[in-house]
Amino acid sequence: MGIDGFIAAIVSSVELDPNAVSTARPTLLILAASMIDAASSSERALRRINSGAPRAGSPLSRLFNEATLQDARKHVVDATLVAEYALLSACDHARAFATLLRVSRRPATSVVTLTRAALESLARARWLARDEDLNALVHRTLSLLYGDLRYPAYFGEQMLTRNGLPLDPAAQRALYRSELARLGLQEPAKVEISKLVADLIDADIKHQDGPRLYSILSSVAHAHRAGINAFVQIEPGTDHFAMEAPLPTITEFVLQVAVTLLSTTEAVLSWYGAVPAELDRVHGAMARVAARLDLLPEEAFAES
Image 1 (cartoon, helix red, strand yellow):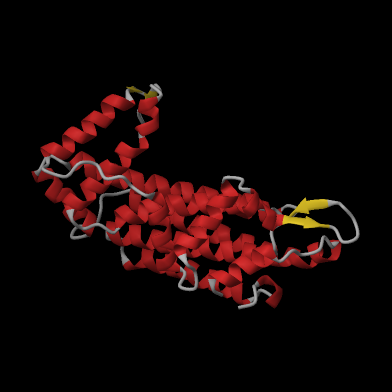
Image 2 (cartoon, one colour):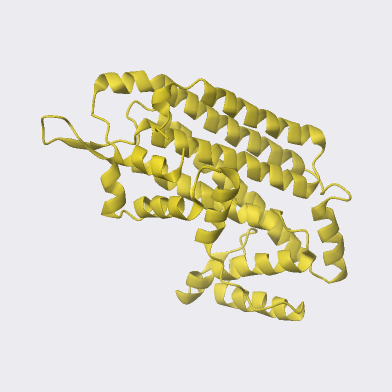
């Protein structure tokens, strides 16, 4: 299904028919199971590889070895933490999405916001986990961390480290800049999360248009009337209105998040040098998601 078909699925309203809700419920439960499977498989994989050092000879192991020689090991640690935390956050959003699909009332704009947040988290993880060049990884990591502290520094927020110690965001930003200079790297780059997400979408779901889909997701997340209008439905013969996401739209979002989540987990595992059995578990989850989608009725998909 192309992006135009996706937009049509959102814009075409479905009448508020109680029978339609009941017939859609089995489909929503299958979609919820797909999300839970993807999230659980990713979390388990991350816990297993995180319990030990990267496998000898893996991209991440080589990065650590090279970083030790340049006194930059802490920046590779930061890169792994950013990627791991982002992946865990995406799993949490996927679980929240699945929870919404299991309640009696079908969700609307909330699934759009959860999809956007999950993809933003995954884009950060994938952007770092694909790097095998130390300078590129360090520059990306410090640029991300530097950008993250822009507004906390501007507003003079008092922050805490992972260990609960006070952190001055302005001083930390200055430290990141000095580290880049010490290592002979360029000034911090401005990281465009919209481009990272668009590239991620284009890489994982071939029928989507990354920039346009991210624009749609952002429109709804920012409560633009043009975006929310697509979810407002009028009960036939009345002035009563409600909000509900069309079933094909939910299917598309589940597909996008589940596939991207598992693909990102696969990338992180490869970065760590996970053994083949670990990758096989993720591939098994991908196969199960595909099998569940094959069980869905035609009504779960938009017309192409």
